[in-house]
Image (cartoon, rainbow, N blue to C red; front, side, top):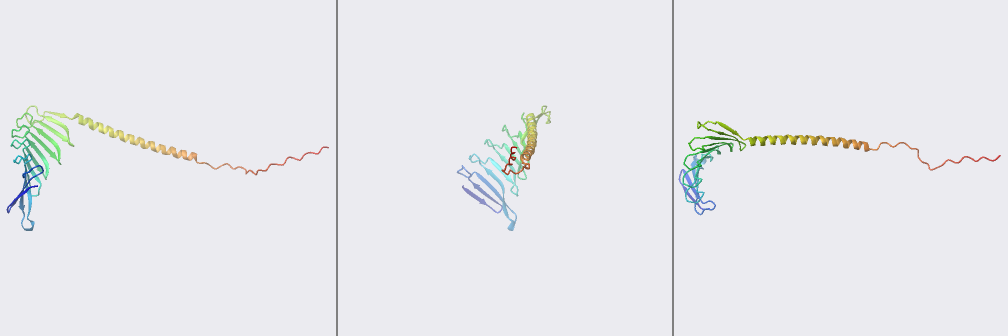
Length: 226
């Protein structure tokens, strides 16, 4: 990796060549804050030339704590910024996009705890949103449409398929619980039956028998003739 460095009393600039680039295409700007032993540098800006044409097309700025604040990017490399990112406490909060490349954002994405929460779209290119999308757990829940151009929802389209999937999942969970309950009950009955079988198979005390001596009675004495 190729490095170049420029430094003064208040800031420091470091340029580096990233993977796949022969010339430096990453520029980082650091600022020194604090005094004495507490003096240290923090990253305040980073610029990247992602397509190696010599022009930086991504610029991100940071606060004194090193957390991301804003980012601007030229996604289609036409020399005009078309994507704007805003961060809150270092996490992505909003993304504005110019999808038709006229220099004006026409799509706004909002994030909560790092997950997509809602989207606004300007589909008729009049500079005002006319479609609103609401997301839950990263999936589209409902979509609102402004028909008369007053920036208010005239019709909500709910994601019936999402609702159906939720109902199916709930029914499946209930069926699983019932099956487990039946299986548990069946195992209990089986144990009772097995116990009963073992009890019946246990030999009881044998009836008392006279011991066999192996001797026979002598025949009665024969009568003498008269």
